Image 1 (spheres, helix red, strand yellow):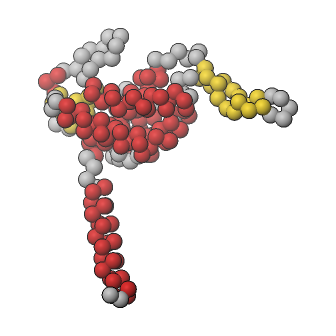
Image 2 (cartoon, rainbow, N blue to C red; image 1 turned 180 degrees about the horizontal axis):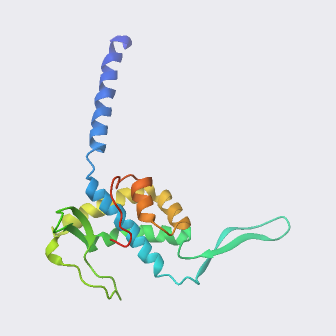
Image 3 (cartoon, rainbow, N blue to C red; image 1 turned 180 degrees about the vertical axis):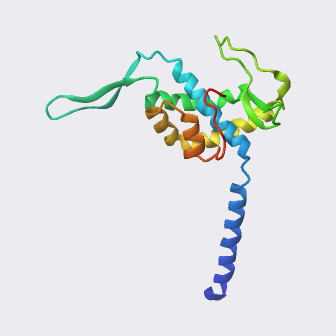
Length: 189
């Protein structure tokens, strides 16, 4: 078979594949991914807040300079790249503490934390507004979480090492785009 005769067929295959890959990409559940992104930010912020602010970690090179000095410095442990990497390894396991929540007034759906944290004296949420679908519900949120962490790990670490305010909004709206058009009320989650 002539190579020139195969080119239109090969082109058609590439066009079809690109259409299907874009369609598969577009099937992400916006509410699910936005909720997972916000949960990641919330869980990281909570874990960071539990670290003693006086704890520090040495970062930098441990190689000697020609003059015999070291290029290392101390940074707060809570927002260090090392600590954030460790937190990201386990953050998606915490998605089991979330369930689908339906706002009774607006009927808007999102995943919210239902399980209290240890030593958390806040009120329990109203469980009648949660839909517990068994492991499938939290498994889909965990899957979305793992996808976000895998795709944006470097951005998440960079954001949390530098920023302290409105990280959920920056991560979920500006960086990942999973919550475009979502109004963030700071203090919610």
